[in-house]
Length: 72
Image 1 (tube, rainbow, N blue to C red):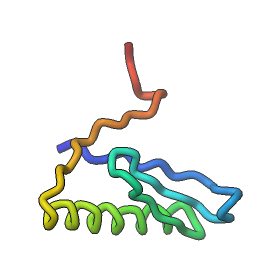
Image 2: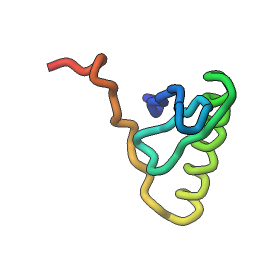
Image 3: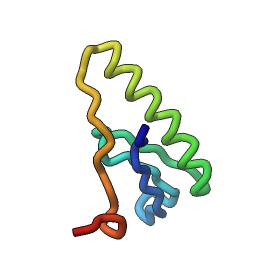
């Protein structure tokens, strides 16, 4: 099964690393290190999916691909 892409980047505004999952609306997390941000994003993903399932909301399929991985 294909999983969701996670972007990890430094945010100067937040003075922290941010990990976000573009396919899951508003699903992101912060951390002092890239690894910490990633671990927190994985927790946020599981919580996001659990709430969607419990609420009967649609769960989007993993679609996001960074431009560097896209082919014509």
